[in-house]
Length: 173
Image (cartoon, rainbow, N blue to C red; front, top):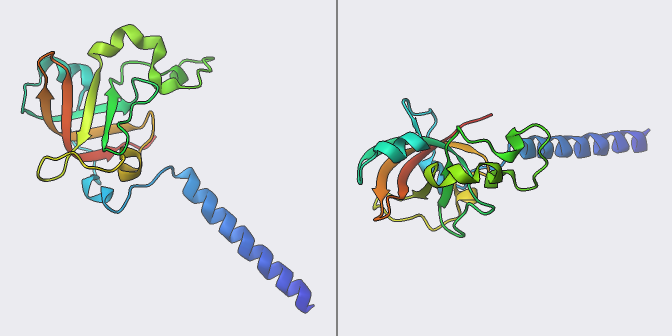
């Protein structure tokens, strides 16, 4: 009888540990302790899509922008809180029924639209410096995550748009 109780107790213990692990995995990545200060609990109102911000934002202007992480096979700047976002009007390969592209976040079916539908995002600290931690671990994001960013627009001489984001909201699916 003692052995039976011990076996049942161990089974419950292992089952509980397995369930809690699966629940964590289903929730997706989580932000690092440092990253939580950049995350917003509520979605900012009146976010504009990438195409709209590209058309209207001036250098140094405060913006609220929404987009999906992607635009290339590797949208990340390694070891930095920087990544590319794509306008939500474009379809990732995974949004196209029957498409089995292994890298759907590269938007290979939308290549002609990408130059006018993307922006680079740099998460910056309160001194305006790029955070030196990979965005995936800092914010708990991955390819095709939809993010709403508050920050400032920065334009280069070619008109490319970079968002210096000081806060991020991650939309849940």
